[in-house]
Length: 169
Ligand SMILES: CC(C)(COP(=O)(O)OP(=O)(O)OC[C@H]1O[C@@H](n2cnc3c(N)ncnc32)[C@H](O)[C@@H]1OP(=O)(O)O)[C@@H](O)C(=O)NCCC(=O)NCCS
Image 1 (tube, protein in one colour):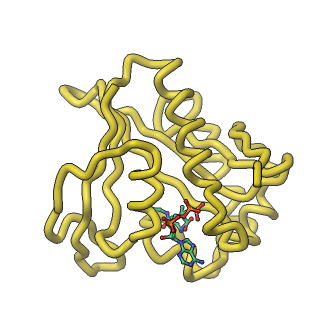
Image 2 (tube, protein in one colour; image 1 turned 90 degrees about the vertical axis):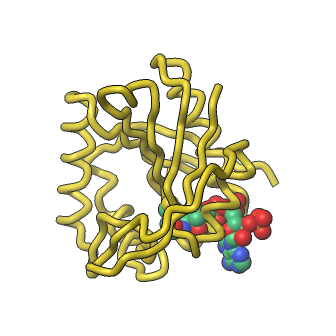
């Protein structure tokens, strides 16, 4: 099946859709910056953050749309100092759409945006070691597993092992 997946910047009108699918324990399990319950106000604050970052050059956030409906989020962050040719990526989509091959399409779209608009030559992701679905997404997009980071991420005060994936052009 072919999906009509596009990336675009967030608008405040997306807050309700974002709140609907982000208010989900399963979706948030391996995300660092979310909260439960996740309200429309939280979504609104996130969209303001995304708009501010777009201007400041911070995390660049995009809505993932399916047939023009917002079903997820994907972002990249250009690193600083001697890592300024690297960008990290992060992403999530509504549980309703998991396991349809949608996120690999979104990641490939994001890679095009990154490589067209910047001098970035390395894109990486650090994922919770137990997040096999996310590892599969990265592998399908050509990322290579580079390392195992013991106690590499902390969520809610608990340390978790992480895996580093990267793609180099
Ligand atoms: C991780 C995530 C982005 C994957 O997106 P997706 O569009 O479902 O990706 P895919 O359809 O390519 O599936 C990837 C893998 O997910 C797993 N998976 C997803 N849904 C599944 C389901 N219902 N049952 C079993 N496996 C499932 C499979 O391992 C699959 O790999 P496979 O295609 O080789 O079988 C999505 O599950 C998600 O948003 N999760 C919550 C947020 C998150 O963890 N983000 C990543 C933080 S680093």
